[in-house]
Image 1 (cartoon, rainbow, N blue to C red):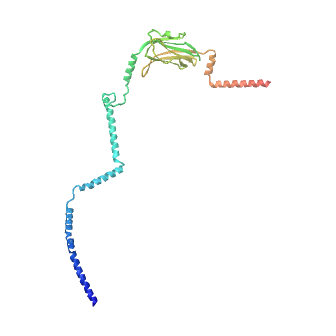
Image 2: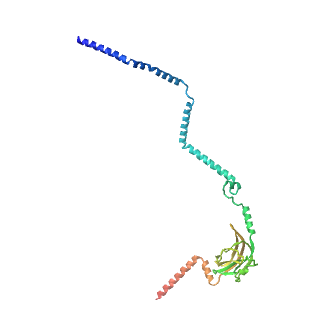
Image 3: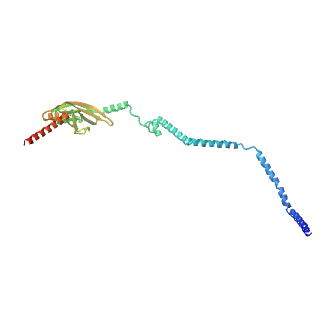
Length: 304
């Protein structure tokens, strides 16, 4: 009986407590129930925003990105498209500058000088070179010339030859020669301020005894001397050549040719035979002489 009473009392207390709790929490529930309308409004606004048409620039973004990606891929495949373009442009500009500036002219042209352009100097034409040579020849002066050679010579015996040019105003240059009774030849030649004289001969050994190039002197004669040694017997020619020295050329002016008779006599004949003989015969002769001497020595000592 007591347990039933306690149960009823507990139920009563629980009911009273539950009512009190409901009364204390009623305003909070009202506020909680009133909150959903704003959420509904937000959802409606979101739906309206989604229903509005999209902006027009948006479609351009995708093609732009696509073109950029394609450009990057092409650049990657070509190994640097921009560098190649720069190289081609620079090469084209260089070709244009060379072709264009080459047509303007050289530094000798007034337009090229104003532009500061330098170029190769064109080579002188044959007509220009000819006119320069003619102008140089017009400056030459005519002077007397003389040279002396022996009429005959000995084999392997040297002799002297002399050439003289007189630019002092005298009528002859013979007085400048040694006059040793040889062959004297006189004449005239057009000469420049600087003159070169040469002597040549196929069968002679020639040594210069004076400077080959000399400046003409107005005070005394210019003299050239050579030492000449015949190398073979017979009639041989000596050739005298006179050249005018220009700034950039050597112009032949006069040529003389003399014949010298080279003779062989006495011991020179033996020397000439030894020089002209076949080396094999000379060798055999030497061996024969050595063998003969050896046999003579054997016989001499054998008798003892």
